[in-house]
Amino acid sequence: MPPKPEHTDTDGVFRALAHPIRRRLLDLLRQRPRTTGELAEQFEISRYGVMKHLAVLDEAHLLLVTRRGRERWNHLNPVPVAEIHRRYVSRIAESASGLLLGLRTSLEGETTMTESVKTAFAVAEVVSEVKVAAPPARVWDAITGGIGDWWPAGFYSSPRPSRMVLEPRLGGRVYEDWGTGDASGLLWYTVIGIEPGRELRLSGELSPDWGGPARLSTRWTLTPEGDGTIVRLQEVLSGRLAPETQANMTRGWDTILGHLRPFAEAAAAQPRTAPKA
Image (cartoon, rainbow, N blue to C red; front, top):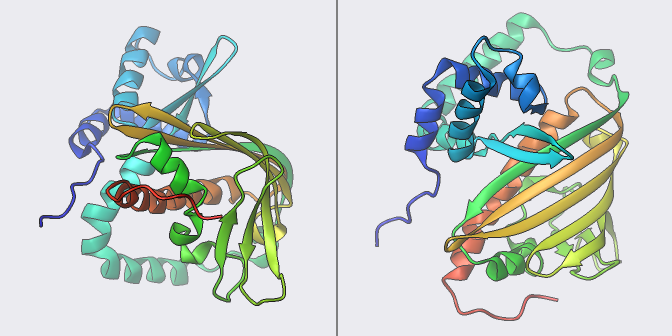
């Protein structure tokens, strides 16, 4: 049986990246989310021209849009580019690039410990999105009952074998079960809002070990699109954030959604069973 095709529209992404104005827009959004007006001010072309370029980026899923009142906020969605890198770059150049990065690090010198632990109070927002070729009900089952089966192995705080658990009810917990038989583990979030099959709101804390201390307000939304589902993750961090925390959290959620997608798609091909307790 031939392998299942990837769902990233690579042609659309390459077309979007081909124009220098669109690449410049992505560079600006890589720094922070911006309103359409802020972006238009950076170019000599008309606001309408900038909006046409933003529409191309949006069509290629390189852009995520939120609205605050009358303002349209544009966020970078790095997932499509990350998938292209995984498919066409990392498989070919992983070994060579690792050697070059190691050489550069040794020549430039390591960052001092004092510089690496600097923190400042800040509020940051992380937005990540992926399309899953499965209906919302099956994606919901994967996020809730199946989370322990697809959660990335490197995203636990404990080095011991463990599983992630999500209790899909108001006041439910999202936590690591360390499987030691003595009720040990780590609480990540508490469920503060839930609409089965559509939305999950969480509240949690980010420890200093992961770039905090900070409060986390997290929202998962599932939106039907054709035969699939758009899974969107929005997380607001507020607290004493290390300079690299926002970028690290963005990469982390991109990786997590990247693990969710194939699991949910594979599960959708099987007869539906009751979610795990």
